[in-house]
Image 1 (tube, rainbow, N blue to C red):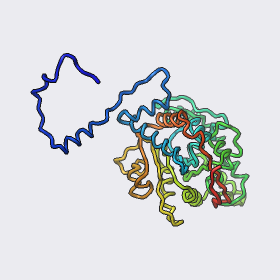
Image 2: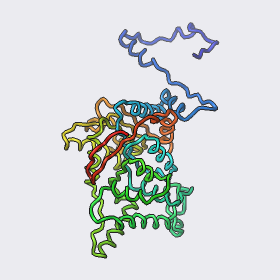
Image 3: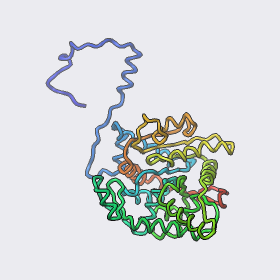
Image 4: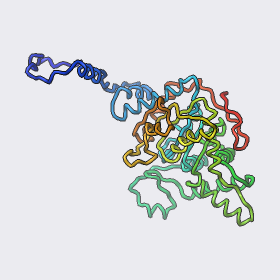
Length: 371
C-alpha cells in the first residue's frame, strides 16, 4: 500500500469531517471495502487470465469479467442448462466466423438463433468467397459500379453474392413442396455445404439446431423469393418458410430443457425471439424463465428499444428468472466475443460437457437428451 514518506498523519490533523453515526460508519467501511485492482499484464498472460482479471477492474472491463463469470456458472451447473446463442450484427464480416464455429465445435452452445444475414455470410464464405478489408470512407457509388458491396469497413463481391443467392434458390427447388421451419430448410442447405469451417456445416454435423425467425429479411430470402416466383411460373407451389413453426419448435426445446441459458451477441430479433420462447412455455402449462443470461452489445437503453432492454428489465416479464445470474457488457462484439470465447476455451469449461441430441419428427421434438 502506497505511502508518501514526506508527510505524517499529524500534517492532516487539522482536516475534519462531520462525525458519522456507528451505522453510517459501518456502511462507509463496507462501501470502501474492496479495492479496484490495477491490471497487471505479463509476457505470457492468456486471454482467459486477462478476462478473469477484468472482474476486479471497473467500467466495461468489469462487465466483461462478470459475463465470463456467468458463463462459468452455466457450464459448471450440474443440471446442464440448454444454451441458446442469439446472433445479430455483421459478425462474419468482422472476422468472427471461426470463433462462432469453435463455440459450436467445443459444445459451448446447444441452439443457435440468428439473423439471416449472419447465416448467409457463412454460406457465402463456404464457397471460398472472401470478405475484404475496405474503409467506411469509400466512394460507394464507385463501389456499386464495380459490383462491390460494403459492410462498414469490409467489402464483399456482389457477383459472388448473386451466385450465393442462386444456391439458396436451387436447394429450395430440390425440396418437396410445402411449409418448412427455418431449421428444416437450413439443414437442407447444410447438407450441400462441404466447408468444415462453416458454422452451418458444423451445426448440421453435431445436431445443433439453427433457427432464423426472420429468414426473409436476408439474402437467403432473396433466393427463396426467386424460388417462389419460378415455381409459380411453372404452376407449382414451391416451399414456404413457416415462422410460426419456428415458434413451435423453439418452445418445445425450452420446455424439454431442465434449465435454459441465453447468450446474446448484440440484440435484434434473435434476442427478442429467444426471450419470447420462454414466455410461450405457458402454452404447455410451464412458468419458465432463463436461469442464466448474458449480453454483449452497444445498444443504448434510453430509447426503450427491445434490443437494448436490459436483462434486468426482462425479469419484469418473467423472461429472466428473478434469481437468475445475469450480466451485460456494452462492448462491441468484434472485441467482446473473442474475449469471452477465449475465456471459455482457455478455462476448458466445456471440455467434458455432453452434447444434446434432438430427435425431430417434422416439427415435433420427440426427445431431447444428452449423449
